[in-house]
Image (cartoon, rainbow, N blue to C red):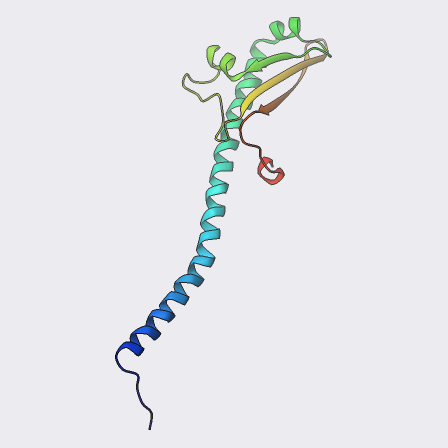
Length: 134
């Protein structure tokens, strides 16, 4: 004849089972939530950088003569977010840094008359891994 567990033994078996189940659940959920949070941060930083890029392109189109008079093939015209805000290409209150406390510096060179090449650099702040930078 089979004996049923009674009292404290039955409670401890259920508690152990529940504890093991919650531990396994945490092993699956915590890494997923962490990855989702990182992806959200990277997405926000990328949209911030995209706004700076679009504002920079518009600035370059509207101020080609000014940039052309100062930039050469070896000496770049340097543009930052404060200048873009001051000129009205970005809204006032736009953050000069991204989520990782990095600042944007655009360097514009002119290899041929009124032909511009630009590159936006991030300086300072927290270093990003190669996968995060992508």
